[in-house]
Amino acid sequence: MAAPSEITVRNLSGSWKSNARLTDDPTAAMELQGVSWLVRKVIARAEINLAITQTTDASTGVSHIATVQKTLGRVMEADFVLDWQERGQVHAVFGQQDVKSRFCDVEQIEETFLREGWEPGLQEVVEVIVEGSGCTAWQVWGFEVIDGERHHVRRSLVAKGEKQQMIKMVYDWDEPKEV
Image (tube, rainbow, N blue to C red):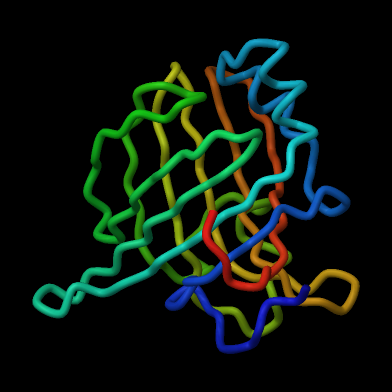
């Protein structure tokens, strides 16, 4: 289902479901991150249900994005504080990570794959940098119109040394439910 127009990077709260037809195969990026062959194969075929709660701290004005991801019967939670301060977290698949995130203008993104292809008129995106497993993953979250429908999209560039992999994850708006 297409994402409603009132859902923006400043208001991502809701339920999302991965779109297998439009999402890139993540196996090469996960291999670069040291994920085992079996786990890569299973995750590549799994549906991801994502519940997002986005709030803004009234005293600081800083936005927080809390995600609950359910796939293959596992629940993984992650918090993103959009203040560009590095924070440690442990991910069930990727292990210990250092993460920083912020809102930024699309034009501030240097890498072409991460900067282009967004919904016409989109000026602001969420930028996330994740370091761990000897890799760096640059992510940009926003919206893209694909086949006439508006989708939440997360573009990632994963780099380890001189090797790079790019992946686009596409999510459909889902009727709100617990995940």
